[in-house]
Image 1: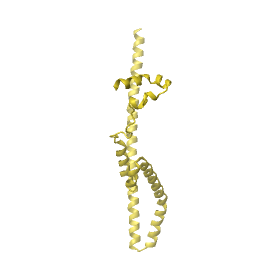
Image 2: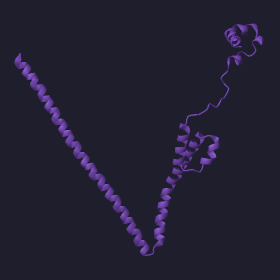
Image 3: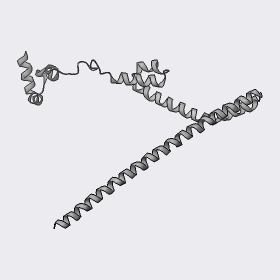
Image 4: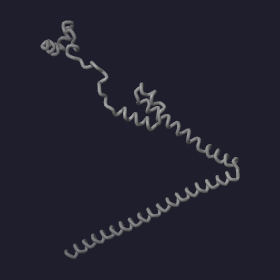
Length: 173
């Protein structure tokens, strides 16, 4: 019996050691992967910077040679490429502004319609977060006298239905 328990304990110990070595190996692979990812990102950043420098150098060369036509064509192509994105951006901003303006009270809409989007978002959040200091509907809570009115003018069925109210209003007088 004791031999069997020793064997089973050894198996459990070996299994735990394998898990530890696997975790260590996985952590090494993760660290190595992070290192390579960082190097790749740095390389991409350097390539982007070099492209910008090269383009600026090329533009300077064209300016020195006074080839403004080539330079103008280059910028025109760039503008034509970016115009659709500008139009999409402007429509998105206008839609967002109109939704925010709808959330404002009508008397404040005219004042905020020409403001920037961030200002408008801030003002809408501020105005919507303020609790109402006074209820808008004054006098909507009815008193017993108002509910039953002149009880002498009530019909027989109404008197039965409002008997408790009639007595309480009579007791108050």
